Length: 300
Image (cartoon, rainbow, N blue to C red; front, top):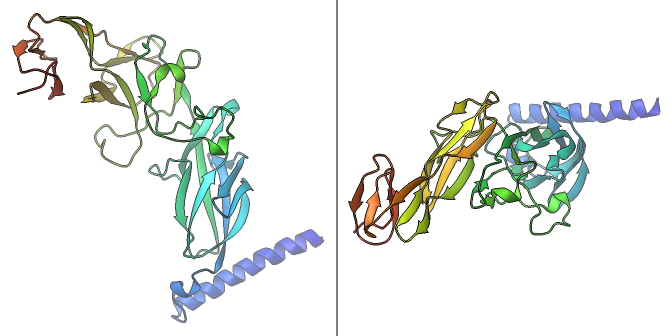
């Protein structure tokens, strides 16, 4: 009975404070800035499908270990950095996906400003990851997973000290039973300069076999669970001698593989190959790639 009275009293105080704040602002007695530093109750929660899933979170520099669904008082109008300390639940195959359903806030920490709400919440949203088969991928292929959180540099690090680098990593380092686990249907191939995260695959644009023979990157293909080929899984461009492909793993993708590289024999070391027509034409020395043409040597 005593605990019930304490809980009722706590929520009554919060409700009353909220009404007084609203009245003061609405009647012009005070400005929101007058309340800067006024303590607000902020709840932190790891959740999936609006259901708390446990683990912990923290406010950097204030309290860095708060159990999910816990509360912390923070000053209105000030900025804080919130972080989930449990970025993945491997047994359930779920990982941190975004904050408060905002797809641009996909990193495991984010800066937020405490609002004038009496009670507010910072939600670390988790989603399911699913395996994509990459069993035939060679060792020189890489992937950039914007959600990847790892402890490659310090295998003994605790999960809250893992890093989210958003950089290319060798595919072989991430394979688990020949698969890489990803979030499905993420990214916008029509807006690669936007704020939405997207996966990238990367492979050599050209491999030199011998003095006059080259293999030229020829794109990717995917197959569904019935073994039917799905073409055009991404958009690629040259990036420092590598073909970098923005990729969306749609719901029907079961496996992904490289198309067979085109074998090209070039007798003239100053020739170029047009990736579309297969035509060879003379160019100056070096190498470049542009407008769907793979040039073994750069333009004059």
